[in-house]
Length: 267
Image (cartoon, rainbow, N blue to C red):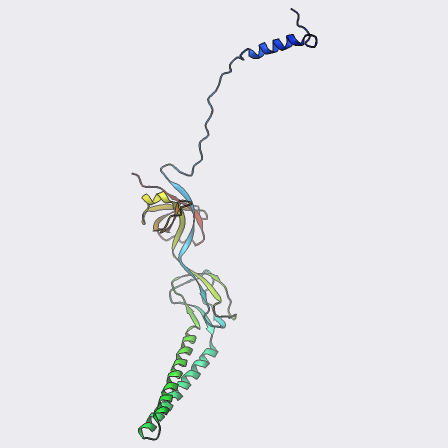
């Protein structure tokens, strides 16, 4: 039959459309889906990479204990020094004059005491004069000791061997008590502090070996765990640990950073 126009036979068009919809479409061949690998920070063998920074084992800021003018700074920035070596000296001419004055006052107090004791022996003086002279001598001794202590602050020695990281003042600059003078570090041993998963505590012990890849030198260096934190962070389930570079490498300096690579021992 010749197909009719749907405008003239709408009912017939509806019936034919329903029949076509009910007819199943031919099935298409399917291909298995490709599964993307899940991202993970783990490496083969249980290794983990953790960011860490090189830090000196000891470091401090040397500050002025008196108000005075800086006379000398023998060790410049980056310079090395030994324990006890002079780092800063001040112009202490005023303190030296005060010390000389205290010594003179002590000499006078001792002479006064001797005179009063002699007069007391000759019954020409009283016990009160002797006690007052002894008190004056004790006061003069205390003044002398105080001035000697102040004069001892006129030079600053190194508390340990190391290097000057930053020089905060210049020669001929007047400083106040408590003002920072130098930042010094002990770089004889460089350490790493970082966080590790708390489940590592089942095998992690001080002395365990690890490796650190330093970004600046693009080299790997051996290291060993030295300390393990006293508590686990319950939120991140991590614990702070410290490691030290195993050996001396002149190219390494504090502040460099890199990636720590550690793996659990084979069971």
